Image (cartoon, rainbow, N blue to C red):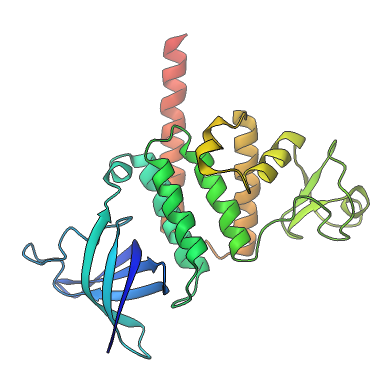
Length: 265
């Protein structure tokens, strides 16, 4: 068995027997891998408390050639991201991002850009007051990196120019439509000019500037609906447990915010 080493983020885990665990890592050098953490559920295990969801660390593992499961040697913590796990809403967002990466990446295929995207998003989210915007940035940039990015600058059908006064977006076609194509049987919905401009800008804007973008709650909700529909159509997300959890937490959070706003009046 070859010994491999890489920066890694824990993006999931599953119980195996009474004391073991299958840990899903997204590594910088080897992409997504699954490895067995022997005895990790015993209190005296050297891995106990280390291979928790979202933990970033230095992973050394034994690669089992031709096998789906490898074996963890050591996992030394670089960043626990404990503050994210202590915030239920941010934890829900990050769990969704982690499970989405599991869904759209293949085992053993390195992608340093996606690794950096996940790590940078979590790092920015620790102190951010706009975690929802960071998730939208993550979604758009992840789609781009896996070759599913929605076209936003020209018509997805004919590559013609877009009338930004009354733009339309087609989830099925994969992007915005010009006036002619939007009337040619392609189902589409109107997207506000401000939301379209926001989606264009956040493709490239540095993470540290995300929170200073001027946007309205209507823009954020419209972008969420469009991206949610796009991802649901182009990526199989029906089994994402984290997505159902996130939706319940967001609903509860919005309810709490509404009550707080009404009490301030």
